[in-house]
Amino acid sequence: MTRSYRRPVAFALVAALVLAGCSMTPSMTAPEAERDLPETFAPAPGDTTLPAAAADTARYDPQRWWTAFGDSTLTALVDTALADNLDLTSARARVEELAAQFRIARAPLFPSVNANGQYNYQNQPANTGIGGAIGGGGGGDGGNGDAPPDGGQQQSIPDRFEFATYQATLGLSYELDFWGRVRSQRKAALSQYFATAADLQTARLSVISQTISTYFQVASLQRQAALGRQAVDLLEQRLEITQDRYARGLTSSFQLFTVRQSLETARSEQPPLESQLYDARSRLSTLLGRFAGTALLPDSLAPSLELSPVPAGLPADLLMQRPDVRAGALRLEAARQQIGVARAEMLPSLSLTGTGGTQSSSLASLVDVDQRFANFVAQLTAPLFQGGRLRANIDAAEARYKQQAAAYENTVLTAFREVKAALVAYDKQRLRLQTVQNQVASARATFQTQRDRYERGIGDVLSLLDAERGLVQARTRLAVARRAAVNARLTLHRALGGTWTDAAPVEDPRLLE
Image 1 (cartoon, rainbow, N blue to C red):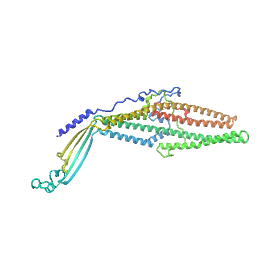
Image 2: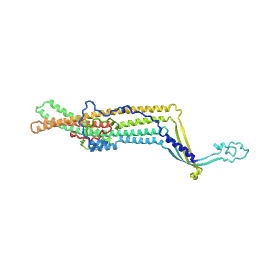
Image 3: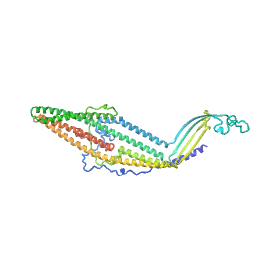
Image 4: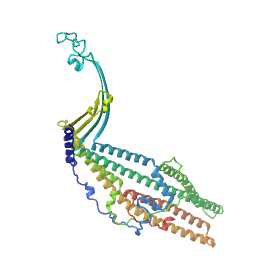
């Protein structure tokens, strides 16, 4: 009996091994946007770039590209945001959920084993159920008052049946994955998991960029507010001198009113700057997972800039490192696997079920090997008519694949456009920053000249104040240009999904003005 029980099980296992390679998932060609992707990000006609720099890969880790700014405060803020940002916490939990969903999807690839212990007690009249069918119970009248069928002899059948059964079983069930349905579900779940992990990288890149951008915004606004206060002080001195000259008839009322209007304009610009500074500090606190105003920053920030030029001819396949592009490709693969799942559901399925254990009317004899029993069932199920549901499932899966294919192509096209635009914007902002640096150098030279003239007694104080005010205004424009250049650099990092090269940053002393 044991040999005959093992034979069908062995046959089923051999069949499972032979048919395990079947799959109904179709092969699909790569989307057109991916096939036609240019080899490099060629510069647009008329683009002008600053001179490229030599590479030095030992300066910073490309995976932690924000360390290239060389600012310990900034690096600490980014590390804190990566650890405590609540959006990232939620995204990480989503990845954990998809990891669990993958384990759920792959579970049917393995047999299901269940242990069961059962106690059954029955107490019922003998004239019901099987007992009634054989004429049991009721004082020998068959339970209905009729004479005994043997002419009056009393049958030896009890009036009630009472019995107890103890049972311990071990059950095993397994559905043979003939057509790869479960394997396709597992691959689809795995692709969804990796896509969600890529979404986490997108969120991570966003938090890094927002933290850096907000940090530089705080530094820029602090610098602008300080320069604004300096401009107000200079205008107050200029107004005092102009009022004295007007009282002595040495200047016109128009010049007096012009200076006074300039002073009031400078004063009116301070409150919005201070409000923006508070808002930027509050947003930085939120990025760090803290209440507004609790982010500790130095009173004076002078972040360094890493604005090295981008090498010409970047390979276009850098787009594949963008997390949203990877996520789109993975979701497209998941949709393809779901077509295989829908197709496999139209074909027959074979499930195996085996149960073995012991049963007895006495708990003491439950462990007796002679009380064993075994049961094996092989079930073949073929869908014959489902009202078109299964065919509609295939059509729906193919339609979802087309949607994902279109979404993926759109993601690739959008990513390519964003990189091209970010390359141009970054180049132009660097050129703009160079121009503003030249303006600062000219304003500094003018101020130095007027100060030398004033110290030698051949210049007037008004010219000196105007030259110093011009230098303050130039430095204010430089603070704005520095922030715009940093934002352009961050936009390029986000467009590429990280860094573009292992080249080290090159510090330009003029950027530290």
